[in-house]
Length: 235
Image (cartoon, rainbow, N blue to C red; front, side, top):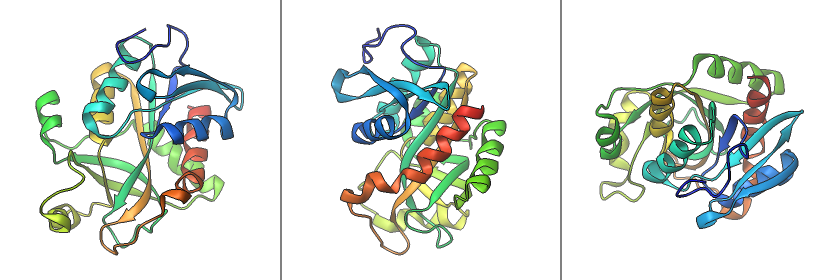
């Protein structure tokens, strides 16, 4: 048991998928895992453990943003002995090459917020585990899941006074998408010597102004979840 997770040692698998939304965590567990059991309810951050194609896999809610994400990731890595973290999150599209509802694999992330600098002391780009990244690309092709791989941006702020203009520089760098957790994922995994990969689904598009409706959110995550679980099963 940790300050934010009520599960005991051994309740989590060595590979954990990390959605931000507890409703998504429950949907993923009930739809895709064999014999899922809830191992955490504290603060509504639902966590589940089950099996996918015979391999133990867990799913843990992280909440929104770097601060919340780091709490759960740290406790999973430090206390529960987790070795692999796969984010299954949402993002905003920054490139016209990335369609609404598309899947993005973060090949590199740049942090534009203060928290990453305070915690890790740097703002340099970070990246995923190379083997997980290569496996995700290969399995996406095998499964016929269209995805884009490239640079993503991680921000501490969702509602920003500069609006879309704040993304002019990241777009000029070729950034595909923006989320609020991936830099924390890659940095803390490196700190603990763990493996990490961030898979994202585009739920709103900064360039086109398109939005998905929240009512369709869970159905949108089928491809991303399948891909994450295939990577988890084979890694």
